[in-house]
Every structure is written in C-alpha cells, then in structure tokens.
Length: 156
Length: 184
Image 1 (cartoon, rainbow over the protein chains, first blue to last red):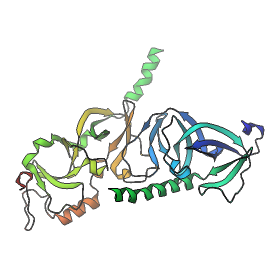
Image 2 (cartoon, rainbow over the protein chains, first blue to last red):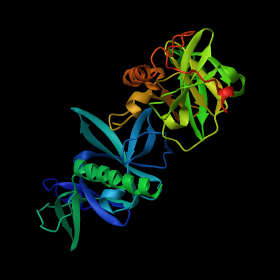
Image 3 (spheres, helix red, strand yellow):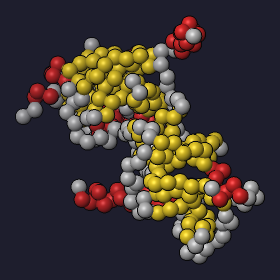
Image 4 (cartoon, each protein chain N blue to C red):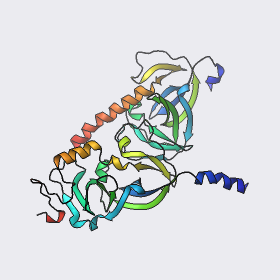
C-alpha cells in the first residue's frame, strides 16, 4: 500500500476490467465487495448488467468492459462500489472487476496517448495506467451498445 | 436475548405489506400488485372473447378481449419487456386500466414487504415498466407498473387507429370485429 506513505499525494484504486488495468480516484470508490449475487431483469439501459443487493440497497452493476477493453466483462465475484452523481444526487453503483485491486498514490499527468475514457495517466514503477473518467467511460459504453443494435438487426 | 431478538422483529412485521402476484415470462419473474389485477384466466378459457385488431399500431397489441361487458387491449408480455419469444398460458386482466397481459405462468401469490426505487442509473423504458424492485426469497424481482403496459400515448394511438373499439357492443362502421375463431 504505497498510498499510506504520503497523505499529500493523491490516491487511486487500480483495478482490472477485462485485460486492462485502470485507475479511479480513491474519492469516488466506496468499497470493494465480493460475491454478491447478480440479479438481472429486462431493461433498455445500455451497460447495466443487472443489480446487486448490498445492505438492503439495490446497486446497479455497470459493465465498463465495452468502453475500457472493447468487450463485455466476464462474470466475476468482485465488484468495486463507486459513487456517481446523477441529476444532482449521488448514487452508488457496482463495477465488476477481475483480479486484484490495489490502493496506490501517485501524481496524475496528462498524456497524449491516454485513452478516450481517461482524464490522465499514472506512472506506477514504469507501468502506465490510465485514470478513468467514469462518466466518459459510461458514455462510451452506451455508444458501444448503440453501435451493436443495427448489426443485430441486420443479422436478424 | 431471544426476547430482544423477537421484539426486534416486531417493527419489521409492522411494515406495510402488499399482496402481489408473481408471474413469469420465460425465465424471468415479475411481481404485480394483486390489487391491480381483476382476474387471472388461462388463455384457453378466453376463446371467443378475443377479437383481432384491424389496425394493430403496436406490435405488442394485436387483440382485445371482452370480459364482463368490458374490453381490454391484450398486451404480449414478452414483447412488452423485449424478451425472447415465449408461450403465454395465462392472462392477467388488470383493474383500472384497459389492459390484459399475456404471461407464461403464474408462480405464486406473495407478500411484498419492501419496494425499492429503481436506481437512477436506469434511464430506459424500465422507468415506465416498473414501480421499482422488491426482494422475494433473497431474489430481486421487478415490480410491474400496471399503467406501464400501455402508456397514455400508446392508448391514444390505439384508440385513434381503432376508434370506439373498447366500447363494448359498439361495432363502428368500417371496423370489422373478427373473432379469433372466425379466421379463415
């Protein structure tokens, strides 16, 4: 946990979506939860994979796989609970993650090669990790789903 | 300790309860308030009470059904919820709305103790379809909104294209009311 070395340096949660490691500002992450059952029901909102029940609350599960790694996420036992603001209200959502999550500290910097969903980049001992703009990634996931629809219709 | 635990349960039992009908379409379960269901029939028993719409403006509505001097638009449950093709065997005739919903089966009557609002992240048609979600036997199940099966706009379109059809006994000129059994 490098993050505990210096409280003045911003901290990030690094996690894996599909095959890609990305980071989120620590302040937007509430917790990491394991093994909640994923429930799904009919809906038309892109990127929502279902919901999980957590302490009597319903958390929508947002699959960032399409935006971040170009494919829907594999089923997983772990979810990162993040906070997003919708219509002025904060809502907790769950993001399926693969592999380990770690808390790191570092200075984010702009980079010309950063992914479209990123607000910047971290250098972790030589590993370049994009820092996620959650809303941008969600919007990209929505666009990915929308692009899929005509293809399915054509095939049908 | 046991007494404390029991008394702790008392307030929970005092929470408002709502009787619901649990129904399924394909593998998906839904609940709907029992108070919004007037009657549950098997599709076989409807027989000659089903009339085909001459101008089906919505893919999910192709018929009306007459029951007790009233008519209801028959909404295909699987098409409404964009589910794969299924085999409806029951129909939920709703109260206060001119809607009868085709469903695959009735699973049970149950008591709903909690109604959780749909998270704001859901922004699609489901905001019209559901009152929220509930938890039944550790399962999260959507709670159908009776007025969501046909919105005011959809009802207006149906009425516009099939004028007077819901008024029982009225067979307006130019509107043939072909009964299901009369198909060639």
